[in-house]
Amino acid sequence: MSILKVIEVLSNSEISWEDATRKGVAKAAKSVKHIRSVYVQEQSAVVINGAVTEFRVNLKLTFELE
Image 1 (spheres, rainbow, N blue to C red):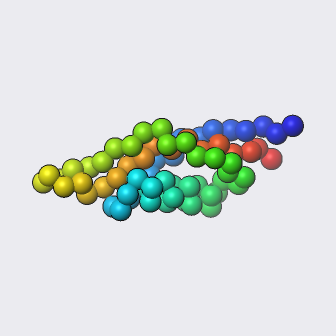
Image 2 (image 1 turned 120 degrees about the vertical axis):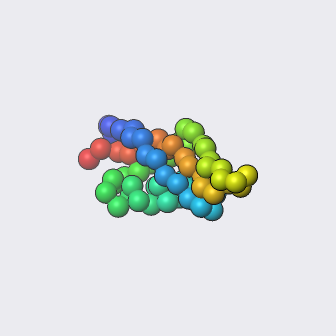
Image 3 (image 1 turned 90 degrees about the vertical axis):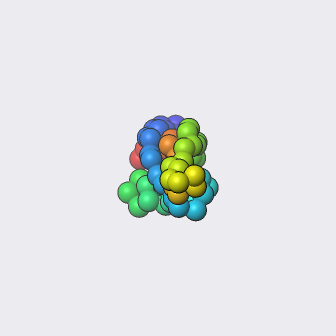
């Protein structure tokens, strides 16, 4: 039987929401083992002078406990 845990991670990117998601998972994977899935809970963006300058995501990462 496996036990799974969910944590919340915030990440950002100047490129896209997808890039912010990849960066968040990659950074979390450096200290969290056995990541099974990621759920993008929220997306938002920063707008400066009428242009999007930063993409932000609120992620829920699911991983297996050892």
